[in-house]
Length: 466
Image (tube, rainbow, N blue to C red; front, side, top):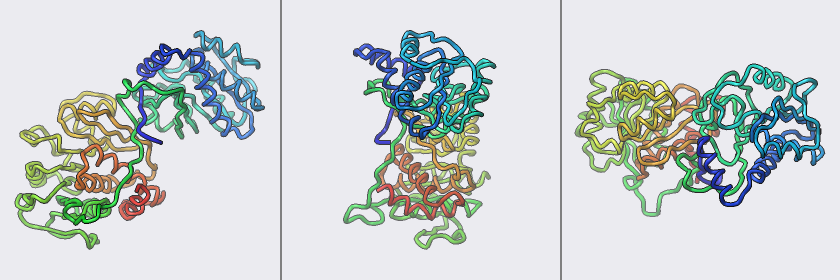
């Protein structure tokens, strides 16, 4: 992705289209741009084979007629199926320009690619049974499925599946990305997602965006270990998690990483400094620029005491794993929560919302309300990672490798986040750089990775993002 790109809800996308229309771009012209842009991707996937375009009654169906006509003009065999008549002027105009026949059912249809233009953005209820059956039958008869804007049956704004949805190979976002392109469970059916532009978008609708890859940097000449960042990790009851976080941290940019623990974890990196003794005294070191607490901490009273001491150190802090289950209003009282960055997975996010009295149902809503309620930056990790803060737009991220679903990879991520935070980055930049670095390390390590391999792959991943 060339840069940070807006993510628009269904209502915002309609508002954008109205602005473009007010500027003199007709609905028919917008449909032409969308359809021809989408047809280019379908052309590549079809590789000369036959294509079936399933058209709905609205403008998404109109896009389908444009796609069909464009592909037919290029010499492909194209079949159009439309179980309903067009209901908008632009869709009727697009159908009138289609020079082929229009079928109403799947009789005899099959081929290389099925293009789903039945319903795109804005759907709020399940497909009618006859339409769901039609999509399923056509999906079974084609080698590949391309969804235009969104697969039929996906809710635009929260990524919910409104029934059984055919798993697509490619989804073409029209005009702008939508939240469903980055949120589960929709993420499990969209396949590869590509953006089809329809013109320059007005700036005022960019409340959300997808974060592009960062450009990391090397230390400036004259830098030393403390100027690069002095990071501390608070150990606990389980040494392995702290070891993974520590290994990732020493590779992720910090100049000096210290683990506060009673003993060194097995196979700890030689560059990792171990310090035991009084934690409050150790965290009083004014050179510390960031802390991490949670991996392997435990959930005992002693662990809670460690968390309280860490929060009182008044240092930028990443809170993960066990520490998230200990966090509450009592511990945050009198603490500047804006310097805290939490990294919950879905279960931990749900637990935090229960603790802080947040009743939101969607992942995005939970993360945003938790950030607003507490003042913390929330990195809600998982197959659909997003980043929320009280005073900045929510960030989405391209999906990372599925093989990150492995024990300990979250500990690696927290170590990377804290390391980037120690270099002087603000919470948003540190977290977004860490998400990309973590994803790139997964690509380097490969699909058979364990968390140890992921941490070891961070240096190569860092080099790729320079």
